[in-house]
Image 1 (cartoon, rainbow, N blue to C red):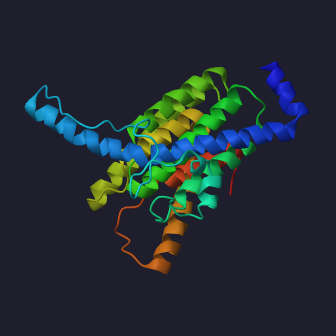
Image 2 (image 1 turned 45 degrees about the vertical axis):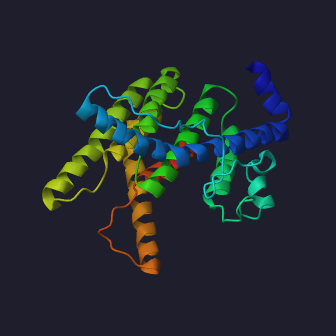
Image 3 (image 1 turned 30 degrees about the horizontal axis):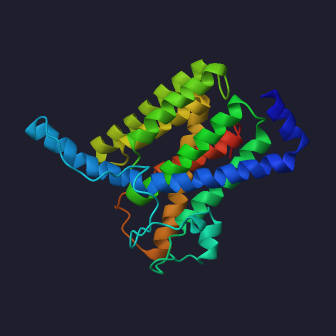
Length: 281
């Protein structure tokens, strides 16, 4: 580790370039997670229902997970040629259209890759190589995936929120971001805070204002950033979500009673407080 620290100090440009490339390829994998994980969950739910009703039932199903089938066009399902699968550059070379069927490739793909690369470089400029940097990179990757999935599907999968919570507690065993005591209290307080808000709102209005995934994401952020960050985090997320939602619906129209994704704003706020722990209005 000392050699890596020395390298980053002696060759900062090379170090940032390495983090950028790492972030681009991690972002490419995050795109796979964002696209496939919700589909995997939808495929899993009928299987679990069948098992509950019929007992020990084995349902034959084509394999579909994060690793198989190989990367393919979401429109015509043809495998993506390796030279076009390079993060960001492949999208630019193809001018935003698939090589096989000439259909538009969503902006989300290069944006996730570029954002991950840029944030990895930003983290590398703030933390030297070590546990804190490794933790920051992991947290940023999880938050990007969760924000994109919730924005597209209104889901915050347990497969991401629960490991994120335990990873935060594990990282803070060494007080990487906050003392372990603060992290444990943050996890508990984060979950209970939104749980209480949810039940108060439901009791008063009969409507669901939040989902259980929001509770778990705030609990995970509390495990990473400590209980002291929770008030700022919730306030920043609520204000950001409210302002952007009003602007969007004022411009494009829409019913204010429709469900909104709160997870992306929690994720963005968590990222801000990761880089600026003492952020205040």
